[in-house]
Amino acid sequence: MDCEFIRAGFPSQPVNALTALAFVGAGVLLATRRRGTGPVVYGLVLVAVGMTSFLMHGMGLDAAAESVAVVSLALWVALWMALGASRKTVCAWAVATAVGAALIALAPDVRHTTTAVAAAAAALVLVRFQDRKTWIAFTVVAGAAAVYVLSRTGGPWCVSSSPLQGHGLWHLMMAVALWLVGDALADRPQLRTAGTGFPSRVFSPWSPRGDIGEGARGETKDGGGHPLQ
Image (cartoon, rainbow, N blue to C red; front, side, top):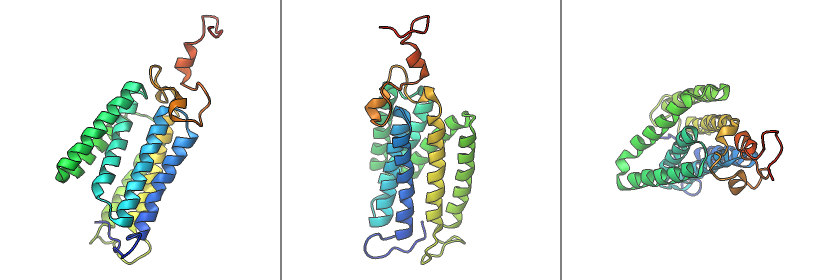
């Protein structure tokens, strides 16, 4: 399906394995440089997507593991945008991810369907998000999808022995697109951490103490704008 010739040893598909690490880089960048529960969870799950893809292409890890990570990322985007990064959202996401993982484990044949449904849910929520970065991300995803189809095994761009692999390019393009989505969502203070949720410092030791969004910060002041004692 992903064209590159499978070699003996590690990594079995070097180009596809190494380009999968772009997801890891994007996730680390978001988790360490953006504040709040939302971007940090997003970044950490994106790291999981990259690592499962790397291990799948590098040593034959079951593709179901990568699917669970992708489903988890899509679910977090949908729930984060719909509910904010509150304690309830994190719990709901964990439960939904567990259900998705169980479904994929018990019925491997529905792996692609489950992934597609989760991705569609995230996309439908993101469409409502009128943001330049998000629309650029959608454009990149469209281009990546075309590359994916053309470079599949048996496709016109598939040369299994070539160091230039379309699937590897798809990895790089999708990593850029997912970074843009995470960065766009992190730009919205109200999506970083909900007022009743976890403070930023619980998930991000790199964030300044007490950075929980303008709305929550405003509640600590009296009518004259002075901090409450």
